[in-house]
Length: 263
Image (cartoon, rainbow, N blue to C red; front, side, top):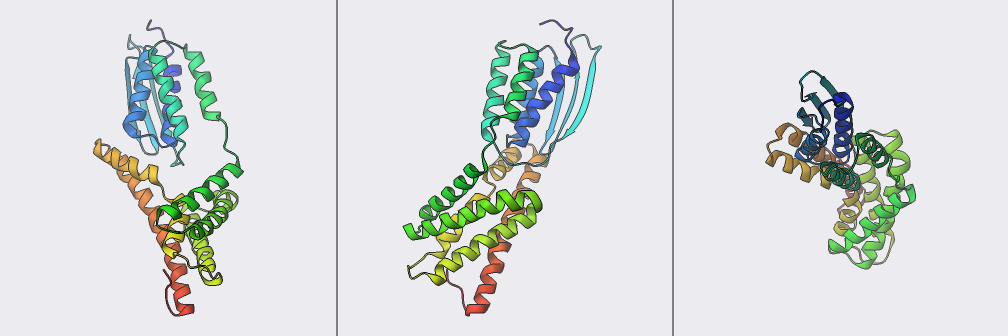
């Protein structure tokens, strides 16, 4: 490919692809590799990419070393949408095979970013279903599963309409875990059906657990990206701590009122 490429445009495109991957839960090495492949496919042979858990640093020169590019972009710690990671990954392979022009790639990336937004009802349904199913996996009965499903529904409503809009991440996770614990306690205290509190609460809080971030933090550390891995692990541990605080406070208050814990 000729070297009279628009270096700025190519590396901007690479950064946008990397940003989408990073903010949706991709590993650091995968982000860097994808950005490198895209830039090289369009003639930027000397691109340097340094990716952290919440930022991308990019510099580059074209083949004649007479065009340079430097940019830093912050990427807020986000949720995970692995479908977008897969789509960008696949797009990079197709780019390396010469299937698209740069302008076509820009449009493809724009389409992937906009994507098809998940409806609120679908998010709530998935949260409720996940809570109910995990209660069974944790040794609960069908009644425990139903209780967790109801708690998961309330959790989904809280996360979609309250926590994501008005609360910080720490406050939201504490209140969300407290909410599902209260619901599970009410089912345990005001129904005659025998219940397994451990299974009910455990299943209900599973949707709050940052599994992707935790696993990626371990992978990043294993791959030598210690800063990013540590940040991701710290973020995950903070969520775990918030969940523990929310559940523990409610159970402690319940124990003081009733004179004991029912688990």
